[in-house]
Image (cartoon, rainbow, N blue to C red):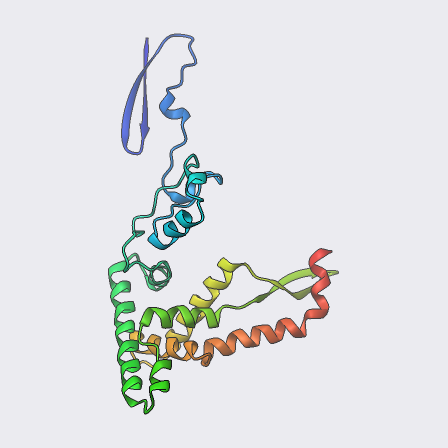
Length: 238
């Protein structure tokens, strides 16, 4: 009898193996999952939001998911009313060198600046109609700003006959969300040295929420380039 040692995730397993026997422990036959992204495609994402669960109960779709394998939720995902996946994604984009606590503090400070500016505008409004138009929730302003910054088209470099053409085409939802957040952070970093990041980020969010600013102009310029290059659109299918 021979003893074989297997080391998996820092744990050493000892297995007895008989002579001339191709024995493999069942532990090694199963797939080791290290996170939610490593699961097969037929695994569904977890539904931990109470609003989404209420919709499933309302439309009687909860029984369809009873026998469906589900991925485990992420570390930061929770059913708390304070959890916002878009805010968490922005924090991950702001984060550098793995310092997520600092990134969270920076985003919260930017939200605080947005709140102060909006409260000031609210008190300066002279009529009740103008006060109703002022959005006081910073998270709503973030959602509106990113929605106004998301492009609908993109330019793809395609080479035909030794010439590279910028071909317009539709953009995926995930890619457009990434570009909107990336453009907002690039516009925030392109600032004077005397202005801190949370203050500049608050101004960029307010400008984008009002459909103005550098990021919205960048999206509009991209759409103009796609419109100018629409003659090359047929290269997508060749």
